[in-house]
Length: 326
Image (tube, rainbow, N blue to C red; front, side, top):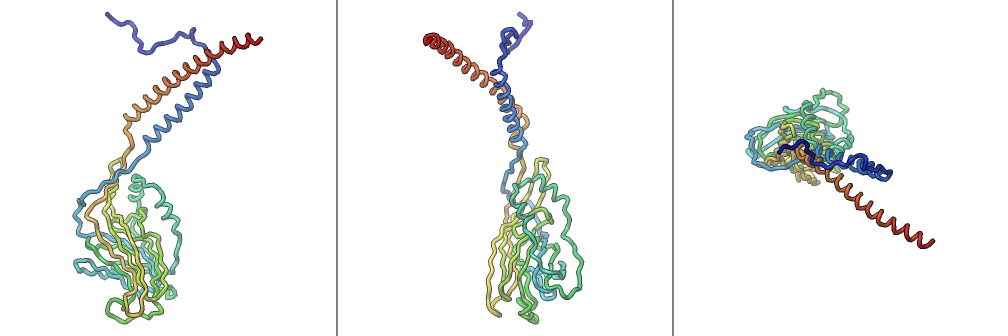
């Protein structure tokens, strides 16, 4: 036996179809609601989520780049910058970074705050990072009226726990003590990061500042550095580091401590991998759209039939009651 014609969907002859105003209105309402639901499904498909995983650090790095941009309210010749790690290796950083005489201004934190409040977009972050350059290399100036010093630059250090400190000349190290009236550890941190410099990545200490209330005051920052890998949906990777920080400040008397800025950092042996993923595949989207359109039309048709049957079953009774009253 051969099938000459086969149609799985029953058709109603056009002569048996009665067009009504209520049916047209219902069709428009159903179409509008269906469009909203379809747009919502497509929006869900376009929405990306971030998957967080911890891995054992796969990279064997003996050195790590540290990026620094700090302004201290003291003359450059009155400051010394040093770093000492747990292997007792000491670096004199005064020759590895720039010390630029400048004026001390606090500036605005609005830009960093706006970035922190935005949800993480891995693709935009990787794209912006590929366009960034090194720290701004400002020229040194010899104006003696400048009362602050900008310490900026990038340098290599051992990938070990360490303590980087900015102190006044003669305090903490042998040498002539600085005049106490000059000492002022009021400071502003524009950049402190580990690894390749990506200014578009905002770290916890970026655009922060502290005002010193005494000549003998120490600001201590305790940092825990976590290696981080960002992977977008195009499988592009960005290797960097992020950190958490807690801070402490203390004031003491003369010769009872070393005034300065102390950045004590430690590295986690784990790597955080943040992968950008779609909430659903394209095939899943097509299945959901097919189910949505078909199911909604079937449900709306059944509801219309039930309401129409109820309406026409009540209408004759109302007509008979009217004739009886007459």
